[in-house]
Image 1: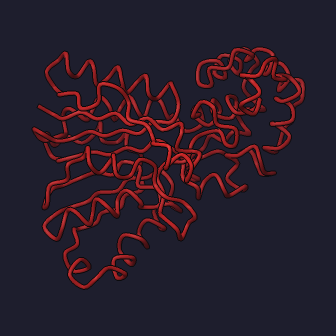
Image 2 (image 1 turned 180 degrees about the horizontal axis):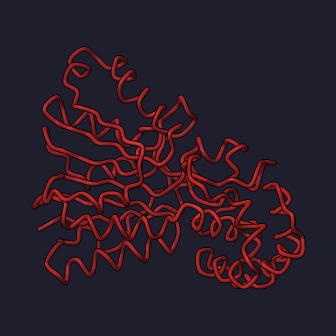
Length: 319
């Protein structure tokens, strides 16, 4: 999760604006680094509620093509409303100068199967969760509300958090909590979870973790004791890091020369993968690095949206 966050197991990223009570993180910075070309073809790899996509579409114009991907069909429907229906709220000229919009229910990892080379002018991936997911207790992402242990971004996927919590053996559970949550107390937490089975709700899981991993110092008190474990289980359930690796591997092949790759991450595991992949791409002659250090939210944005404090944006240009 975004380090330092006290509220949810991951910072909120892509979103849809005031109607959903949420605005996309680092919006201006993402749009600036994409350097959108009128008439181009762009992928919003995590369309979410359509916040970033709407701003991309406004700049693409009628000759352009915007492709939005998301694992979550509920998010896609809200993005469709914003991008297709919502354009009617624009002034007449802008509403008619609108790109082709294609919204697809799929993971961005599937770009690895795209055999077309140098197809896209830009790819944006905002790896944060949407407010739609976090605010719905029935989705099971947040430890702050009573809900089922689900955590699937794609409700059609087979593996749920409840299966992980109640069926994975103690050693494997401890390892995944350590690897994906960077939780030093993973073995203690895994032992407590196994001894407390069956666990059926997010609130019960949070209570078990909190009892097993009480904060020992001021730094640990800054985040809820369940934060890292919830992050780890969510990453495991949704295969998030493998999906990100597939996107990073595919990007140099599918981007056109001068095409832009912009990725916003919310925790150190993601950011480390992005940083390493872009640096390796520079070494191999694929990229020019546009961000020597990650771009972070300014004070004004953090004040307006505290969850943005975890966001880190990195960008590169295909050469």
